Image (cartoon, rainbow, N blue to C red; front, top):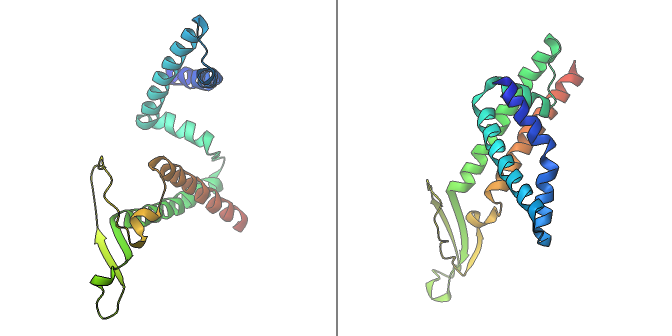
Length: 187
């Protein structure tokens, strides 16, 4: 299994430029037998990518080896193992705190809006509402926005799901590097 995983990873790495060629060639309308071969190559590449992602998820040996190389983690002696352990703990807690922060602002809706003149009470022209919304699945339609909304936490985070995941990965790696660098400088 290890040999198959190594071959798949090398194939993904070394054939990636051909995938880029397919993306750029599709923009200029390239056709012909070469296009057919590149299209089949791209299909095979994505199948291998899906296999590699499942192997990365379920194979501890592949996960440890590949992600250690990508994150440039080297455990050459006991001191470095200790630093990596402490950094991993720091990273785990800081990433968990970030996820709790995002979960809070994804579920709690704080809205400040301007009231119409006929709804004002004792000269008060603004309304502050706090609500909770937790959905297991995304709705297919967007809820109607109030026209007098000044501020709302539901619309203040304009990130897409992909950008949120990229932000979490960058945060995770950044806190690990920061923590391990800080501990190396201490010793």
